[in-house]
Length: 198
Image 1 (cartoon, rainbow, N blue to C red):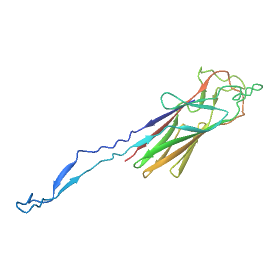
Image 2: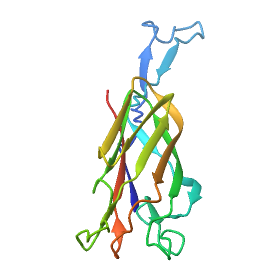
Image 3: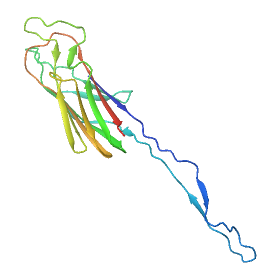
Image 4: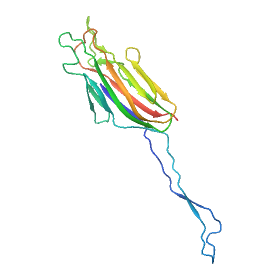
């Protein structure tokens, strides 16, 4: 499973300083007095969002590493993921802390590309075996919470009507039990998009 992060970049533009003359008289001759000048500095902060470096705060029966792309790779393999006696998956969970700053109203969207962990070889279920494993996703950010389960949806979106900065909490839970899985590699990519809406 891979978690990809997409964002709109925040830039702050600071234009050249401009001078405003506050006295039309200029320098007064013979008096030793000078007129005043103001330095007016203006800057524009366009709307945008930035995402900081994510970190795993929970790794239950999973191993999370930061990928070169800045996203995260989640490894579910090993003896802990599948019960070696039954072929039935054991539960797994991860929780990601994702620093976010948006200087205006914004939205966060989380989407599962495959709609679940799907056997990459396309193996068909055989008898009592299955070839996909659903999971649930949760999001807590700026006083809102949202989520979805891949058995019924592929995406969730939350709208925040104002600027916010802090750490979003994203959880992924893979249930254990059920019927055994067909042998193979199961994968999905979960994409997190953060973008300004005004």
